Image (tube, rainbow, N blue to C red; front, side):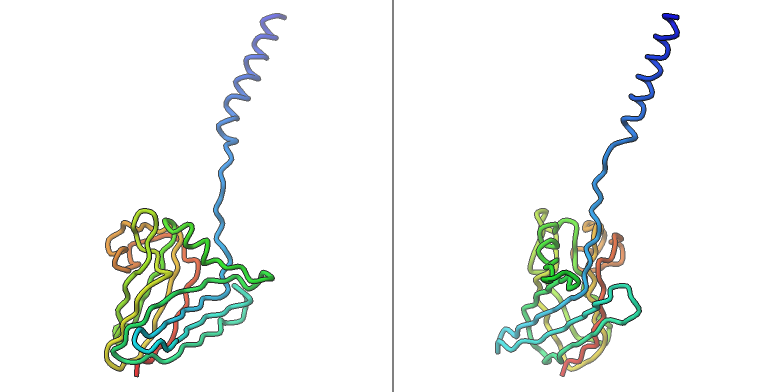
Length: 186
């Protein structure tokens, strides 16, 4: 009888010990809801402001985002900034603060059509000195038109080939938001 009690006790201890590794709590950093992406561009020479906005208040619902984009001036340098909002909250939640705070986990990519005469330079960096893209410089070339996609990637590989230069091809990760703007440079 004593050996049965000892065997039972050892079995219970083994079960509890083996279960403890399976019960590790893992915190999941869920993606934020981003309904609105607003780009503000300020002309360095004239202080004139241009704006692009994608607003999708039903999220993954049936309605398409409302996209607006001001025309840009040719051969101009703009200081740019991006604001990410969750307007489903009241008041609207500023997700930009979290993107910057978790900068090592986020990067904005600017993908323009080959016909569009633009270059982008990152003006902000995370704690590891890798680009984030909330603050940037946009320089336009000659008159042209085409689409510009702005993509916020979460948990991408910032050390992937081309990532530091803004190439999202090999980055992976999850897309938090992607918006495509029809751009005219005049």
